[in-house]
Every structure is written in C-alpha cells, then in structure tokens.
Image (tube, rainbow, N blue to C red):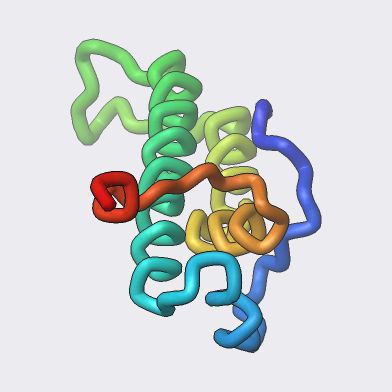
Length: 108
C-alpha cells in the first residue's frame, strides 16, 4: 500500500481559523486551496484502489458467481481506515507542503 504514513488525525479536530488563514489572508482562499488538494488526493486514492481491485474482477460476473475474496476485503478495509482526503489536505496546508498561487495577484 503506497499511501504514506503521516500523523494525520482520523477524527475531525477544532482548528484556529485565524492561524490557518495567516499565510493567505483570506478564509475563502484557504478553503478553496484545501478543497482542490482534497479532490486531488481523493482522485489519487480512488485510482490506486481501482487498480488494486481490478485484479479481482472477472469478465463474467453475475449474482450466482459472487464470492468473498479475503485479499479484496483486506484492501478495502485498509482504504476505509485511511484519513479522509480533507483531513490530509488540511495537514499538508498546515505543514506548508502545498504550493499555491493566485493568478489575480500575478497580474498586478
């Protein structure tokens, strides 16, 4: 499983919005930046999961042939236990790992 192990909390925690907005200066821009990164993370995780689960799919699936595969269940459980993409994006933003720019600022 290639997901990097980080200290991202799996539960939602209260954050100080003033300190979170300091680097950008605008709460709406911070939300936009975090939302875009969360979408990227979500897309990456989904693609990775789809690749791993594609090994278990067969061309002639029907209701009578559905069976339980232990490896598939373990993979699904692993991905269910990962922190949500939004929490990972917030942690990356707090740690300064997200590169962002505002095109409107570049025109001035």
